[in-house]
Length: 293
Image (cartoon, rainbow, N blue to C red; front, side, top):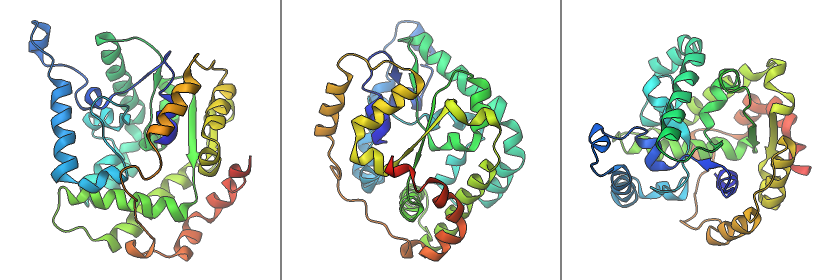
């Protein structure tokens, strides 16, 4: 999220805004000259979530109706989206997703592309800056449908990633269920992510190399502007004039823990460091040196 917000400071490109993500196409009445109420609807939703739905969500993933947001929402209408698991315990869907769902991924990203085209038709036409963890699930399809995409993969110690992710799941599921079993949630989330990582093993050559850049959390936190320059340099993208100043201003206005501290640990979700080593040992070894460069 930090890196996404920094990249969104490039005035020559455009992020996806929350109100756009929630409803990519306006109501038919808008074409007849009536007021487009999508932003107002998004503002009401954010107000509800912040005050009553899940006040603690802002410590994990703050929502801003007119601010950059993940493009996860654009995949929901395809019904092939791991983010559905944020809403409840759906083991049958998870099983289907890992099987039949993967066969549909090219079509899913063609639909996703259509949403982006619809949004560009309505407003500013510029290269997109987009972000969603669910793209990891369909990376080959994404690169097939978007052959000129520049992909940044971020990495972090799984002893931090897994409980943080479980905490997000618990908060989100808590909006839809009165019974969230955190100690069940931990092993389920960990196994799901481990399955996706295993599917990346031996990935095709076109899914590696210059089309993808790996960035470690430690590097990003220690030098956020340097990490952004590294990304632009890797993909041959010029930094927009004034972008660095806007990035500095964003960092000053959004310090760590601005909305409170996000508390989580492995034990809370029925996991131990030994579980993480067993499930993610190979991944941890592969990317341990990234944070030193």
